[in-house]
Amino acid sequence: MEHLFDPALVAKRRRRAARAFDPKSGFLLDIAAEEMAFRLMAVERRFDQAIELFGGTGAVARAAVATGKIGAMTRVDVAGDPDTVAADFEDVPLAPGGANLVLAPLGLHLVNDLPGSLIRIRRALKPDGLFLAAIPATGTLTELNDVLLETETRLFGGASPRVAPFGDVRSIGALLQRAGFALPVADVETYTVRYDSLFGLMRDLRGFGMTNALANRARRPVPQAFFLEAAKLYAERHADPDGRIRATFEIVYLSGWAPHESQPKPLKPGSATVRLADALKGTKGG
Image (tube, rainbow, N blue to C red; front, side, top):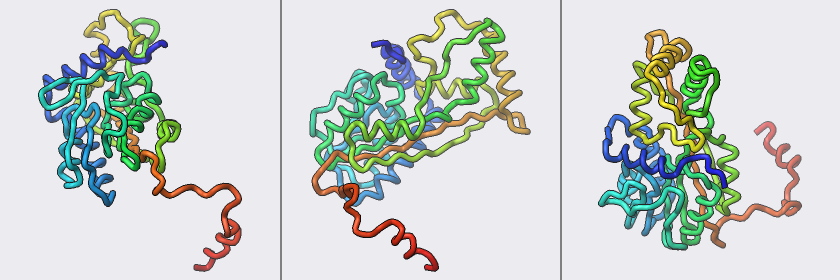
């Protein structure tokens, strides 16, 4: 099967980001940690065994533990530092039915087989276990993609992909359902981050481990003139009146449950006892 991403390069860049960690570059994971902890707080139960899957800085694991709802937390990542269980990015090395909470912040968009990974995560959950994830979506880095494609066309007469494609909220939510999760929910938040120039954005992307790891990326060396031209074009097209540029990050937050007989079941077609028209009539005039 042809891969969209180069797994070895994805892992290499995630490990490099972990070694050279800059707290300022971890802001997206900090945002995801806050959002996912907020969602966890709304669940009225305790999770004895939780797993953070490919969470980079560990911000999400720490935020989850701080809710007081976690018994034990295991971190799984490619970095392989003393605080994590080392794992291949294309694998979900979790024992079936071994956890009642899996957290996957800002990593699953880089796997080649996302449907397969979601199925393995669902199988790793105990019945009625919870899965929470944050995945970059379609609107992410649209400005950067626009600028890099235009710059490469101008300088080289053609363009190769330099920004990973991202799924939309509907397709990502549908994958959750196809993987067998019950009560799936997907909602999206959009964040606009401002930088002095393209080079500040590129520094943060290296800090995230989010630079180009596409399998069909161009292999030719990129001259400095390319990035100077791209920075100029970015400032022309996507700058605010004060000269600072904008970068968009669109994050889909997912939740789903491993099926259990205690969960609410959707009504079968034709089993409703009240007609929709009657229900709507009852709402008129309050």
